[in-house]
Image (cartoon, rainbow, N blue to C red; front, top):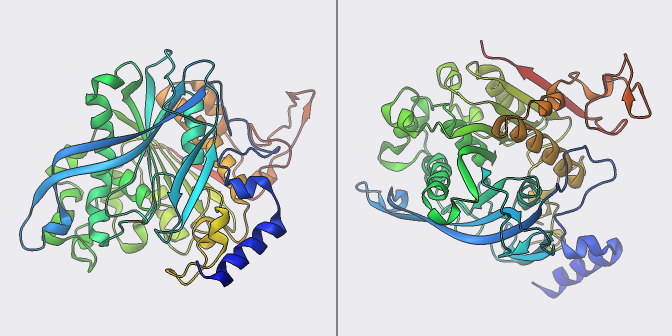
Length: 426
């Protein structure tokens, strides 16, 4: 870092002065957070694991002919820890530029003993392009504390440190998500900890793209000819109605969460493909998203007619709605590599990131509790008036009155700026 940039960063930290920012905490909970945000009854353990699939197409090596090779994913695994586990760990990683180091701090304990109360449902967290396994670490820790095993892979060819041609991400993303479930199911050491028969994918941006395909939404014929499509017509493997796409479907996948899902804006789905989505879906979107486009994301919500789906809209938010961790302190300085401050990769111009993180934790935890644990009581968190600020607060001593329509689980007035919609299968 140049002296001028270092000085600028020091000024930022000095002005803000807060220990939480300097420590880059991912575990904070606002006083006005909704009921299912933050941490639950379990302590949290974390391990770094390696998942290898022996025989996959190597997109980068397939320019002249299809070449196959092992595909290895490094992943962070959060899990419910044994009773009495002391919290606190550090995650050493890099910023959006792929080189500036940063350290994140949370509640998980590195390599802690696992709880003996399992097996627990499996959640795959899938980052954007580019991203890495820590981009949604706030959600990984929070879900593990509520009784889920969470695996967040670094998607090879798609991370801050190894970003390469977009076609690799287009082809590999849903296959990587499937790879995680297969690996966890096949590992005998995970038998008492992980119930891979109850699985979900939470994907951000390109992770949402992959989750939609993995959940049944096959891509269009037109997508195969896009200039950034993978070589050797590989995307045809995810085409709607193809045998290969049907073979990707997995009965163990019970739900998906797609946050800012990319793809509809580039013509990757039509009515046929979207109607193929066969698992319940929760979509989160900012209505000012200039990457995935709010109109295209609404079209996904409206067109997925084969399943129950929800759309949570953050009014006036952009593409960074809900998913990324709060911007690390080091990201406030301009990166020499990027020519801009990576802060913009994490933050939203309007919304407080911590508030969005807490809201995402609430809805994802409730959604997965409903669909992976079959807890029907969680359905109350989705029976909401559409526009949050139109809800009426009529509650006395914790007992709702006849006119109470305020969003369930949210402290009085704290759901403003949100919209929630639900559509049932046709």
